[in-house]
Length: 240
Length: 300
Ligand code: SF4
Ligand code: SF4
Ligand code: SF4
Image (cartoon, rainbow over all chains, first blue to last red):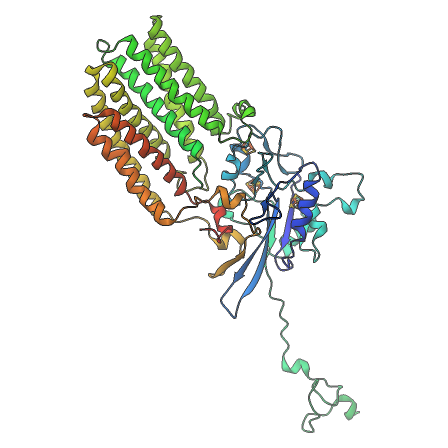
């Protein structure tokens, strides 16, 4: 069974919001649109987005790290939002595990958004229906696109490549390997919704260089950048 | 959670209607000589009035009320869908009960039993809409259905006492006694829920929400400047002080005023209790802390 999902690398995300704008652009002009904007040019601009990037500061000054955190529907394997829907508008596709809302059936009761622990469903204030990330279902199977473009808009937009897309049930897929080898984890595991989307943790990429590693036997100065020291042992060249 | 007026009206109005129907049925069952068909038929009309008003209020909660019929389709999994079926079914039973009394068609006790069972089913469906949401720990507990049943029955019984004051005075005292019993029981169970919820610790933290294990995490941006659905739907938007003051207000109005007044001024007792229940329902929503709020720390 296929379960398509996103894997988001928090170590790579720079918080540029390119995924947010590209998601909005694709979906507002596509099958899932249009995505409402209220007061776009006034105070308190707000609207419907399927994807948001939030920013957190971890630690106390001066030992702080800024973490940018993209957040969209996690296409849970046991989605809390689906069974509560009274109309069947919210459903999970058997063939690829994508959780979708049928806008023609939704009565806008908002019950699904209460059941989802993650706050990733957004009620569209103009269309009066519940909306959420579609995993770009109208892109990823589009035969008219070249194959390498059959990916979610947010994935294609991400400049540093922090977003991976694939089948988390296929152990050899890029996403499964990333989860396995780079410590992929899910959000709020205690909610028992088994999110399909995973996050890859921040990693310290510091390189520890010991003094003896700086010693250059073939360098007359012995140590990079240091002045010549006659007390240092002779190099191989000097000995030969 | 944001308390929606439409849902507050829906749950309190139909609760009183269901409670009133249960009261009418027991009047007929236990005091057949004192009840007149007119009293029971009029009472059923009152039940329908309350439930009809609740139904109308509920439509204001929907984005697409014209599609509401679709909500009856997923009864296998959704308590909301079950409520959507149970409410009209109960109203139909109340209608049949009233007509049977009014026209003298008979079989009233049988219709009454069906109606009472449907009233209880409806209480459970309504309450389970909330109790079935596992991530809202304040609601996901058997006390939620118990409270919906007892609070609705108590307000219906108080209303029955008030109604009997006009239509069947000899029943007033017995109904007022029943209202005292139900109101006291409801005070105990609602109090228990208050105590339980005050001691709850949330299952999720900001650490599990974003998956970073560090004791100090501060949100710097929540992904929107002018708010979003997430900041509107899941926050009550009132000060902590306001929320705290609602508790004594609803306790006094829902329980203590009716207990003191139901024998002497039952109509006033009902009005106070109904107002109290609206405050109670408001608090019921406001005290529920949704885990999604962890992602919106900028909002109180
Ligand atoms: S993240 Fe929320 S909306 Fe998305 S599938 Fe899971 S429970 Fe449903
Ligand atoms: S808002 Fe729409 S999708 Fe969500 S539970 Fe209600 S009908 Fe279903
Ligand atoms: S997969 Fe598509 S709909 Fe979902 S967040 Fe990315 S761009 Fe938006």
